[in-house]
Image 1 (spheres, rainbow, N blue to C red):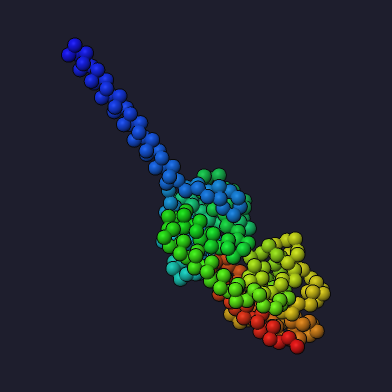
Image 2 (cartoon, rainbow, N blue to C red):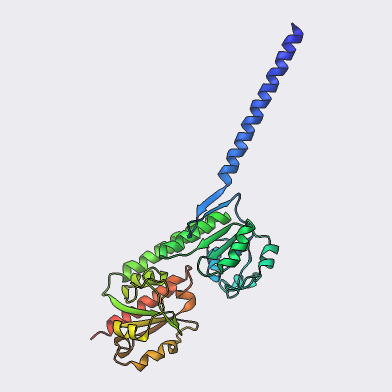
Length: 308
């Protein structure tokens, strides 16, 4: 009987040990699932990371800037040319530019996440990176609120939510303040020139259009089908906007719009409503776009003051 009791006791201990091991395995499995990061990017793709990214490569200047805004600048191990803000971004290793990437260098840097601009990078090269199994996050904001969302998501992917969430909230609050101040003012019709040869503008789905609306302006080419359509001079003359705005590489370089002075009967020309905003402040999808928005809002206010 003693031997039977001993065997029974040993069997009980084994069963208890098995139950403990199973419970521990389930607990560890649940923790692993909880640690997994999963979200949907702007392309509609699902991005999944087993843990926060520690080696991130940014393939566009604005994404580099967004990563710093999200508190993840220290985790960026590679970026592209013209990633010049904040100043710390200038010290990051370059892996090409938006048109031509150095795929070998990218792979050598062993990234655990690559962040890209959906329509600003060569998809053929991105496909090669996707085939390597490297997680890729696509960004394509169309509204100012999308910038705040991108900061939040990048913070989640990098494990820097404590910095990203306050930054996103601050951006939303600042955008709301500008909207409250300017969006209800008398509407100003505006043609916004993003390129001159060929002549190009933005439609109603573009982020710059959201800035125009925030300032109480109306984009005269909002109804175009393409995001950044080519247009003719005749189309601008026919629209006869009250103001013409443009993005420039140099602050205050209004000469970019001097060609419109050949049509002095245009309202924008007759009233001296030719305005420029530095491209880094209006064309980059980052928190600094609100600096560009403030400039544009003040310029449209000047156009209102010149009405007769």
